[in-house]
Image 1 (cartoon, helix red, strand yellow):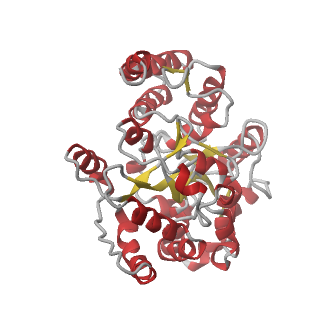
Image 2: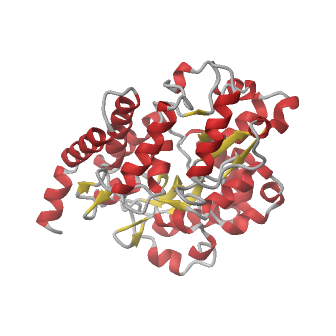
Length: 390
């Protein structure tokens, strides 16, 4: 999908040279259409052999019985070795105790921040806990003009709130994903902290579309903190002038009492059950998982690799802004592994936005979230109650 679909064509010729007789046809899909096209392909028995799949989509395709379990392949592979992968990222590919995908590149969220403006507010290092972060946000806001803020939390992005919620010990869904768990103390705590950032004027009430240009505004100092992913390293390097490059950097997310967790996201490589060439398909997965190929893939795309051993490569080890992602990747957690999660996440965003504007209290918001999640999960409960093969 997307840029990866363009770049992988540059990696295929070497695979074909090293695997005589195997030819790979690459079909590129836009992300906006990929999910629907893959479901249509499944319904029409026309799925590809190998596919890039967002790891939050894996539970859905597992529920359809569309993917090959990869445990025996990985168990016999000298290349795909679980200990070399960041544990939280590897875990996103395990559903029901079985492995269905091999991480290809990772996506998580952490802090991008203006260190010059943070120093101006009296702090020489980024926060390590929510308490420290609150002090910094308050100090930054008190030093800023009225049209500038301490942090940007776009209301059309649910990921910052999800990242905060994953730092708590209570799961977002309970009883094997049968019911919502938003009324639990952990999510209440995270939502309260999230809403406080708006209530105290640290964050503006706006969507990302309301920001003229998030990178230019960041360079102008319209906000100091921004929770985002690895793609923005390249964007900021391209879009900010040389004189502003030293003003920003990255840091892992702070947690309630110390270093925090974030979202285990990204894309994985899967093999469809309908493949008539599963052995060759696995060989391609192994090739794209080789450390040297993953380093080349990073150099071509900027996508961060999921293997620890690739981070010793100079392209990554010398990158100060990327190193914060390496540290964060040791503390990531997957979102709930249910096919309905993306629908629940949409409801989470909508309810949180109402709470930001004061239309719902914390108590009302968490009750509403549980009610909406429980409705979405109704079919899942019915299926699980019937049991396998019913």
